[in-house]
Length: 137
Image (cartoon, rainbow, N blue to C red; front, side, top):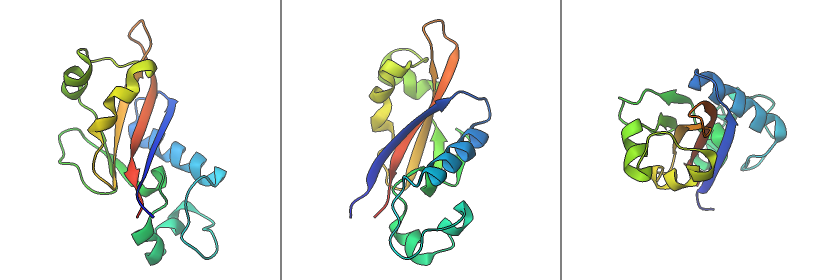
């Protein structure tokens, strides 16, 4: 099985790690993730306790552990926040809206890594967080 590209849009909150944790809880509860075999886990913690699953991945946001600060080099199993400079380079402005969020997709090109961007309404108010990336094997 090849990697799966995934994306999610959630309501904005300033604490990206809290937003990631809430999103992971929603995805886990919904069962919308790949499981290599055997009984499905009862908790999110059990997802990564399984060595086979660690190699296979869930093909979802569950494969991401945390949101890392923009000044850190991207690492596997983490989500990197898109910088205003990256948004400016792709869109010509630094406040993407939901309608143009997909234009940022090519900022997430490495398997086992994710990205996160703040999305704004027409008045420039943050409304959503978009998480996207690719994981799984």
